[in-house]
Amino acid sequence: MSKMNMRKAYGEALLELGRANEKVVALEADLGKSTMSNMFGGEFPERYFQMGIAEANMISAAAGLALTGHTAFASTFAVFASGRPYDQIRSSVAIPRLNVKICGSSAGLSDFGDGKTHQSVDDIAIMRVLPNMKVFSPADYYETKKIVKAMAEIDGPCYIRVNRNDVPVVTGEDDVFEFGKVREMKDGKDVVIFATGFMVYQALEAAKLLEAEGISAKVVNIATIKPFDAEGVRAAAKGMKAAVTVEEASIIGGMGDAVLEALAEGDADSRVRTLRMGIMDCFGTSAQKYDELLVEYHLTPADIVATVKKALA
Image (cartoon, rainbow, N blue to C red; front, side, top):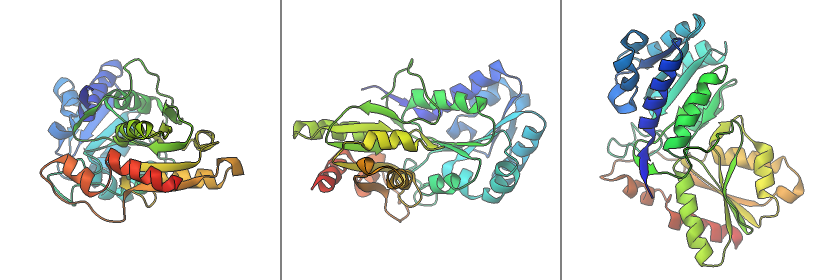
């Protein structure tokens, strides 16, 4: 299976948006080479604002640009994009519903070498709680590119989290991204696995292992975490014996909680035993390789298989 980089997809989509619309501007907090927003800056230096390591100032400036009719994309590492400028995001972007699009790069555990200070386990919960904020977690390169372009068309604030590493491609270049809708990646009749981000690939791999053991697993990709497709989740869970959620983020306030809320508020036929997988109320740690952290935090296909079996027991 081919691998491609989500950060590159962000940079390429931003550049394409800049070519199509002169009102698109980009701001960066001293990490343009890593987030790949520098692709935009290389072609449109007059519309690219390097703010230094001053995330709160970056968001305030993005809000000001949005007030002048621009669509402002602001990017940095996810842990800094969501945490350091929270007050500015809340007061200057979310409350007035401004056209500011925030990209949280190197999300989850994907910045494996820099450890807990640089790994965003809480960004989904932080951004999800904000009124008026749309939250996205794409599965791969192609979905990232489509979501970034969709964000430019959506009126109001948006947040997208992207993985740092090259990850397998699980969607097609010609697939259509439906804003606010879940997407079934694989059909199944015994259990449904709800996944987001890179965990979609892990869930698909787990489904293969389960099939070999006679367990039929449906895999559902939740790329739009807010607004949440509660009806789509309930429909996917209907008739299942159990459900599992898996995300590369804290299980507290994350995608798994959104699934539980949807199922709890639905009809009895969609209420199935649901187990959550994710970062279990702890911070990350440093490692030599990304895969080491996926093993450490029990986010491998084998771990998903074990959780599915537990849910079905």
